Length: 416
Image 1 (spheres, rainbow, N blue to C red):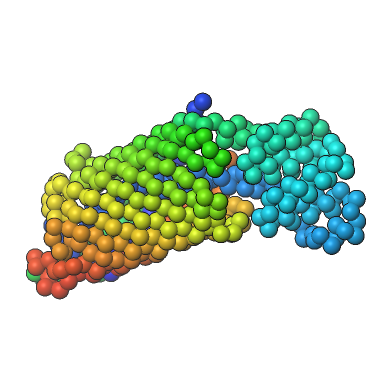
Image 2 (cartoon, rainbow, N blue to C red; image 1 turned 180 degrees about the vertical axis):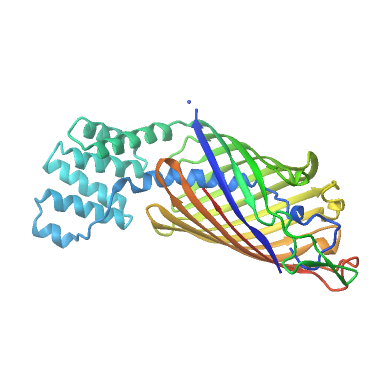
């Protein structure tokens, strides 16, 4: 069993859019055995995009408890009709809500609050022309400062959504602290020829983190909004104490996002380069696909398959790195749950098989990951990461022990 460390990461982001085990030898540095095949920054980029989506999710406001029977008892009550439209939105029935709001405007034209809500609903339905007209009409009337801000934000989002080709640049910088950066065994000892040898003491370390991504996407000429994309990423972690664990990850990938009603399919291919202490440690070619299903308005299951051909090199921090060369297959499934307008929870279970030149570097295993997210004001967020990972290796390392190794890792982290 190994406790991999509690990680605290504070990162600032700028987003611009332009038209394993107690039985372990000295052969491989523990902190680099699990080198990533995707840039660690990918998770941060994913959260930034999720924040952009959540920023518009709560534009429709709080939902009252109103039924159609209530409306029938007082059909000319404007406030009641608007409340009923909001109740339809809460059930995810956007089209019915739009029809209700349209009926209200036929009875009582030029109601800025109703036009505002209609514009927001049409925006969610991707009917951008009607949304622009409704929002512009609302802005010409009397709105509160908050309502005016909502309308302006929605118009800005519509203008961006209507761009077929988008170039997005994301930059970030921050600090990362890991209280067990070298991933020393929890028991305080390691095995050499089945003999316990005292391990190094656990040491925390701080890293200066930098990250960047350039993404180019183009929406295809169809009604579904399908798009193709390509992106390049960089992640760097400059350790303040252990310079031999300085990390650089370069990645590039391309793919498509295809929409089929409530389903979204995203196939992609990619290449990654991992460098340790300015030495090439890992090169990987990968491919895979992810399927998302918007089962409920606030609940979306997903499944993802990924295959990577990993080629490791011997470096000073991991002198037997080549032993880990081989294919890695993973199948993950889980769900994204919008618990509250600003609180979400992602749960992911993963099955992974790693082939390697040496049996003691190959394994099959499982992982469970919980990722809560709290969206704050002005694009800020708090993101937790709690992972339990079990790995059972294919064979023993005779230099370490005659018994086959097994790892249980616990990782906890929080990012701001």
